[in-house]
Image 1 (tube, rainbow, N blue to C red):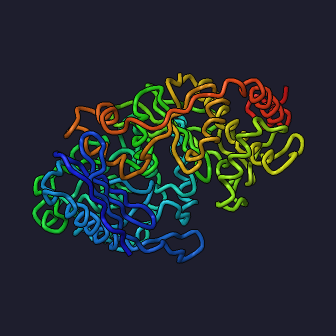
Image 2 (tube, rainbow, N blue to C red; image 1 turned 90 degrees about the vertical axis):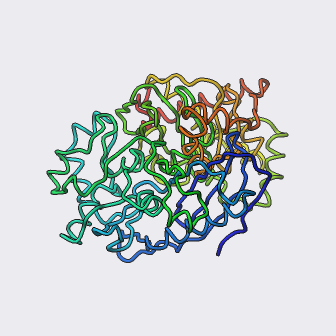
Image 3 (tube, rainbow, N blue to C red; image 1 turned 180 degrees about the vertical axis):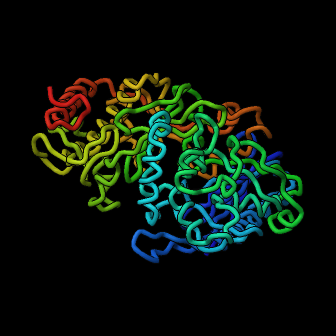
Length: 492
């Protein structure tokens, strides 16, 4: 099933960002000021679990969906797509495809959450421990590196190249193989610090470098749209094909947080903090890891197990009334750490961590308010951790994710942080990919693209009258974490 394309008035030139997500493809066309001119969506088949730990999708469905989304987007433009100067593709991090000499898939794509090669990834972690330590990064069970080795052992001599999702689409757009950006290559083991594949690890695993693509910076031109793709998509022949970034990185870029010191808090089911630093951030606890910025800086980030799912049991139609009641009552009467899972991974790493309450709610509004404050406390702790790692956070915190649509929650976050929070207008992967497409085509660099295209958004200021109570509650929150031995500095 596909959604109808959206059309608005157009000025030229324009760019298109494509997001190849797990369940759908989205194409968004914007002009140099960030105005959305047209967009379309096409569904993808749901990934299947063919065996324990396996997660697969038919990679042959990607190009037809991208082709259709592009065709419907360009058809909605007054000049039929001739105004499009560049296109960039972003996708899930770590999804790979085994391909033959003709570039066609030899089998299904192995998705970002596929765990079939966990043992090979553990071997890769041991073989490259010094390299990973220098990067502040580890090879987890779902890393694409081990799955690339699995592909070689499964397909043998028939395997010509292991491709990432944007490479599959890039080849279709240009008519020839394209490089991969260093963001999509991260979980396949690419070392963006030294700008090389980890040769000692590949040798230990028996994986020839020839099976992996050349790597370039995001926003680099990978080629131009060829005649066949132009006819199929409505893109003009010769249109620049630029390298994208992973979905998470593209979503960050879409908020405008692209210069050192700028950070974005993404409040979805869980909480994610991502930002920009001049130097590589190495976190001894492993709570943070970094992608490489398109212009050579770094993109440190961490993901909590706490977040919007603390409200999972609240019926959606009850949320507006509870938000209003929480706003009216002011700071909660008790402290809550609203972790619903076992263990925490950011802003501290603790397997034994569990949610807790210091006190009891007086009523439903009090309980709701305490949950909102608890997530804000996690966010403040995360930003303080960033500071301890040597990164100065500048300006308002950019905010994205479903939780950021709650004005009272955003005001609580601003007050707890004692910092304005700017709610991003379109913190979407496809929009971020469009900014990368505009970099080097419509604008000189990524900062210029973000300044021209990703501005605006409501700015929420702290509520001064609530600051003392929330400061006190935050102190009780962190003291309890230390008492339980979950924070790095332990009990005191």
